Length: 484
Ligand code: ADP
Ligand code: MG
Image 1 (tube, rainbow, N blue to C red):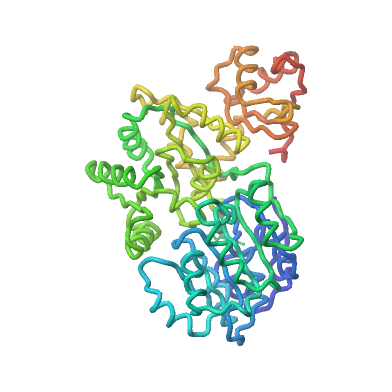
Image 2 (cartoon, helix red, strand yellow; image 1 turned 180 degrees about the vertical axis):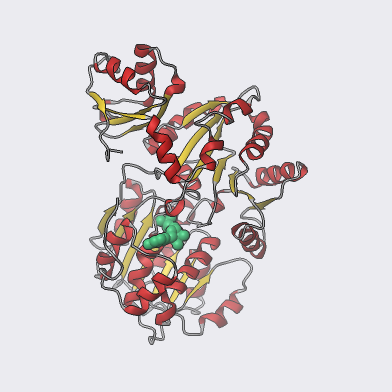
């Protein structure tokens, strides 16, 4: 949503405004506009906003405004699930704090010894950003004193409060002063997470930016129906035909990452692997080489799924299905950041069809399927609405292309147990047009949208207005501009 609020309207001090403009931010994003004024007060906050919408600065800006450069003790702590994210967030916070003289440092396990970190920690540091395990270590060894901590942030809060990390997080949070402001941020929050969040926040204010729609509009999504044994040739074909400026390819296991790196290299492509078991130095260097464009293909486990902000990731491929539907949101959220165009493709085998539906239910959107079994990828990729063209278009061009699409409003949704399959069934059954003409389907609580491609919209509208969906008469009309 457009707003005309400026950073100056937010009442920030000049040193901070200067840093913000220096970073190239001209206007606050929606989540920043909502969160900054609340965070400048003392309320705790739980925030959900899509990937790539500027959540880091949403907590970073009020944090910089409130912290004092002359204070000797650590005043703020930001917890992240991965070391790479800790490094990135610390860098962004230091940028924001530059002219005010505020310093953020990353603290994480692996690579850096506790002793070396102890030295750094003895200097004046205003903000610590890190993974919970290593920070807890330092607290127990009395290398860090959080007695004067004023602000605690959990970035990727649902991941931090998830099974893998919750014990360390609990142990650490129990050592922190209770008179503090606590803020939690993620693109995905569940009721279960909010229950836990309640224990560590006091009357939190909630900010949900378009929680109905988890995936940003600027990410085009496709599903390639394929077989396990065809995945390698499919990936090669996809990369060869679309030539993405850079692509991030997610695999489920470390072994699979290695396997994919190997066959891509054998095919003459320059690919790097990022896995949690590599030495930390190598992990950071690999990421750096991908970030600076030296290497265009990064093959990774979910260690790269959360929070990483890498410019120019044009394509995300789910080579393997993500283990949880949330991971799908985070993985594909590595593209289409800060309103850039992005393309996401998920490879799906027959055994995974049902799971794909779960993902679609979770994101409240259908993912357009392309049958690529049999290896005839070229025909599909050359179609007008294929990923190749998507990758070549920027957001404006995509919007123009979307003009040939008619968006229909359907007056039934999740509460009426309506599923994407019901809409497809009603359209193909009653109008005779093929499933290929049906674009994105989005299902909300009480209504839904469906895109009809190539000017077939009027015909479909007429039939559906007089027909039935799931055996019921349902209101169907053209979606109004601004509905979607
Ligand atoms: P999120 O945490 O919501 O996934 P990030 O905080 O990583 O998103 O920000 C995504 C990108 O948007 C980053 O490259 C960041 O520098 C940029 N960004 C953040 N705020 C603004 C803004 N106000 N104007 C322009 N770009 C911004
Ligand atoms: Mg983030």
